[in-house]
Length: 356
Image (cartoon, rainbow, N blue to C red; front, side, top):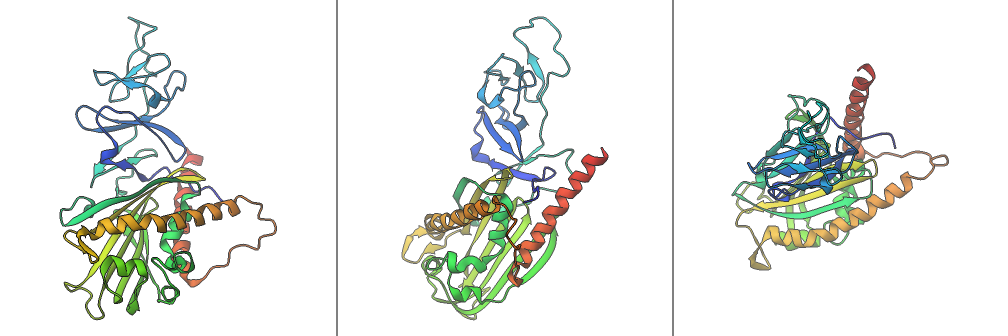
């Protein structure tokens, strides 16, 4: 697989509640080590995770009562702007100008902490808004937060192509009839991010078991859209109702937002949040919110995807000498467009590095 890591992009470093006040968080995103923390003033800050003295991982250090970060190796201390303010072995001496950490821009919005991993942020490229995560008209539950041992593009392709619902998810969210639903594709720009979406509108479709369970409808009209908002976000919007009743009070559904944060070419973090309209209840037990039932059942679906992704990666790591190359179907249109977008972004970065 060709290089796919993009640095000039906003990625989710975590949800806001993952960054407690005065606690260091170590991460690696697109191959770059980071240290992050929420300051006493409530702001999340992020810096290169290596001490500028001897490369000690700063996440192994500690935050002192005055809010500075102390390196665990030689005790150099850094403030919330990344400047070194103390070197214990050189008391009274001027601190070198080079004694500072590289900062990374942070935007906190919609209950998420976004980080820009490249050079100066592109003002035309914004972290996508995900308002339903904090909107009181929606109920939200975290479904997944795990590392996946596969290239992140494989997950994007999986999410854009629901023709794999049969056979991979047969018996829970998929069936063979799902594969026969006509698919339409659209391409757009969302807050400067090149977007691709696949949509399937079905009439009088018999819902697979999990979806019957979630919403209480056996026969439905359904609109199912999977959209890559950016290479870091894929949004799944499923809306269903008895035949002829879409866009009425009978409509039910969910939004699954997938946040994809590459660690390396063969490792990424996959976060999933499920949202349903506030007040919607599970038909089998009205005491249970629908979103809670979705979140309870979906990990089994995700396990099937994880198996497929790691198996794909295992095959991609083998020699291609005797492999004739991938054959593509019409249902692959969306994922092929996603590949084009990512290839263009990688090439643009390489071009800037070459001319710099």
